[in-house]
Image 1 (tube, one colour):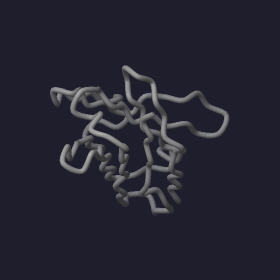
Image 2 (cartoon, helix red, strand yellow; image 1 turned 90 degrees about the horizontal axis):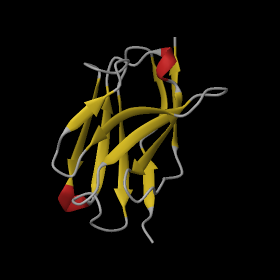
Image 3 (cartoon, one colour; image 1 turned 135 degrees about the horizontal axis):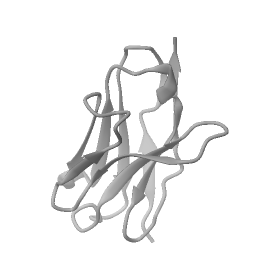
Length: 113
């Protein structure tokens, strides 16, 4: 059973940065695409960014140029570097393995204006 554990969320002022981490219990990231998703109160969960097993990247238009997804295979960890944060980025952020469908528990990001 794959376990995903997110961390790195917190409270930050608008314009600030956070780095989220998603650690897997095994070497799954080398064989599966991983996505970061977010869900704000009253809204549907939305895709933020993905990284394929081959390293191909994809971003939602709303975060292009501000967020970067990357992977450290040796640590079985996928990161989401978030810069120039806006109040509308506030949400619970989840990582997800795109093929096997595992979700982490989420990490809260709060952005003050």
